[in-house]
Image 1 (cartoon, rainbow, N blue to C red):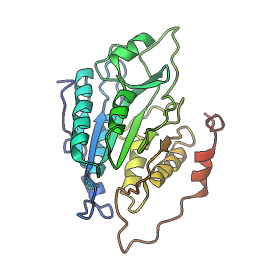
Image 2 (cartoon, one colour):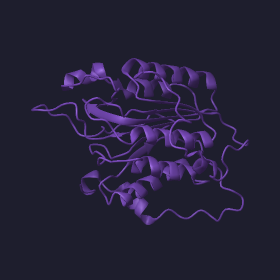
Image 3 (cartoon, rainbow, N blue to C red):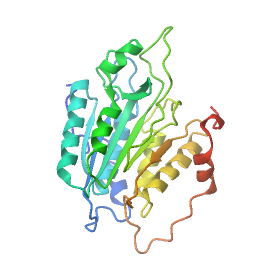
Amino acid sequence: MRGTLRVFICLLLPIVALAAGAPGSVRAQQQEKRIALVVGNGAYAKSPLATTANDAGLIAQTLQAAGFDVVGARDLDGDTLRKSFRDFIQKAQASGPGTVAMIYLAGYGVQLAGENYFIPVDSNITRDTDVPTEALRISDYVRQLASIPLKANIVVLDAARAQPFIEGGQQIASGLGLVEPEPNMLIAFNAAPGTVAPEEAGPYGIYAQSLAEMIRTGGLPLPEVFDRVRLRVNEASKGAQVPWNEQKITAPFSFFERAPDAPPPETAPDQVAAIRSKPIRDLGV
């Protein structure tokens, strides 16, 4: 039934072997508790998305291998999506100050009046005034999460896509709106603010594949994970898609530890810094 919370870690394509082979996976020495909420919405009536359920499954598998307690769900209606967020925030409150909490949302996202919204699969949006009532305003839940004394919060919105809901003469800004992360939080978009990712046929999206790959790379500090994701996606899309992130996390964190016999980590290419510092207006189409 559409809108029913469905744990899907083991139901999608069998990719657990990829994550299980990552260096340092599921190591007992992890001191902090790790929890994650992963949602892939693709079964939209108006314009279904080909990759989002698989993308969420890939990220859920990868995080599970990294020691996260993952709640994974797909094709959630508005009520179930909101309940999933409320339950996750309660879980974070009960987890203690050593917790790393991560949210990954794949689907349609829109911005309106400076706010970013994630669209449930049962939404009935035909004009801009429908967005606040039909969609989930991300900041409502991000602020609640940020108010909890956790080690780190990571919020990934794989949702910057050309929206099919509002047509005709009405105008709505493209992609997701630029936001300032709360203290102790990293926020990442699959495409830079005000831009949208190209439509993809599947089975997986470039951003999710790149994020899973960099998460599995042992020993990378959290900022470098997303710097490398930006470079990889930019290269794979030939400049058509440039991810964005900003963070205010001071505590050190790596998804996986570097194996003792692993070669020294490579220095991130100069292109990473160049892309990160380049103004959005200079990034091209």
